[in-house]
Picture 1 (cartoon, one colour):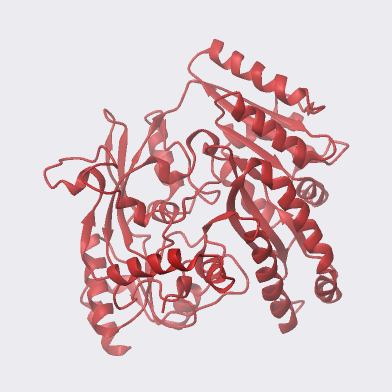
Picture 2: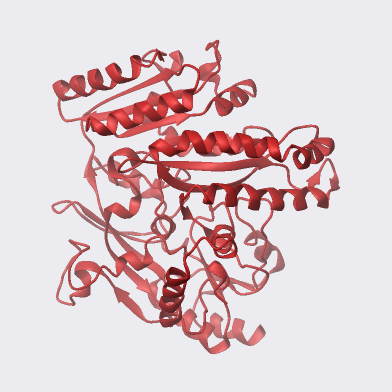
Length: 502
């Protein structure tokens, strides 16, 4: 790799390139404890032209390139599959290029985080609608577009972050640079619309999980933040999953405009409360599922009417309103006012010391998630023998279930399901059996959930390959996707191995 390294040295500054073993290992993992791939080289380009030149060298040398945004993905999305290749870290490309206040469109470099962008927009009374993923303080805009991300604030009102996409600048795996949407017309002076000028080619790169091109510039719609908001949290009765599904369905059927609506399952509330993760619920006697909503409005009258409609629905289900203040247990106010939407998921991943997530994220219709959660409980019982083997070593049982379930666009919710477990290094010793069991159980639970017909959106190494291995894709669909990949990336340079493309 010495010759390749020397070629790359001519493209980027010395500080933006490394083959140091410690640096390479720092880029070898994402959030999960199992998947590891050590790259040969890490490179941090400063602009689109440098990325284009990097790809030209990668094609000449037949070397895999793996783009990395914030590195927050849960299952191997921004690291090599196996060892080797070049990790393309986008962090240096983090500039806000233009805010078109008149047309409400912002253009940024794809490496900027959702947190940094929304902090900037807040100075103008604006936001991005969907605030990106739950890891949005560090997750990149480009990564969010690559995953159809949800999880931050605003998903019930605005849907996935790709709904706000206007145009993209993309470096193809061959090194060619294209623009989509209004910018496909070379006479267009500024981005203003995604659709037109032919097919929606931007859609190819939305949810592609980094296999079809590297996003370098992203233009998004932005929205004025309404001046009025309300937020309430409710303790649910028994059968909280079914009750919350009924509430969400009724909200959609009555056409009530909510900014966020979220169900936090019983197991999360009970376990996390015992461990001190939810201090605002210490006074709540019954640790059951919680439901909250946030609404925004342009007048007090509009706000009052929405609040009344929602409260009528929710209180008719024998729920208990916890009160208006955070100190009363009003999680919704913390989530909206204190920007807790970017802290919720991390708290749940680490709610027990040393536990790590072996999960995946999917979309499913509202009316299906209670049944899926029930089946996940059944799966847990069926695999109690393997789970017990981990307990024998750690004296703590892995936790199976789902994180918060949030309303997104349409009659759909986002479901983050799986289990949390320990890594193989425990109490000063390495226990390889833990990794073996974790991998076996991870595949098993995600295959089970897949067969409920869910739509996985953040796929990375693990889900993209599992979908192929269990035959979830029709032959026609998989071949069509493969043909697109081969056309754009004939040497399979970009994210080699995802979806089993080799």
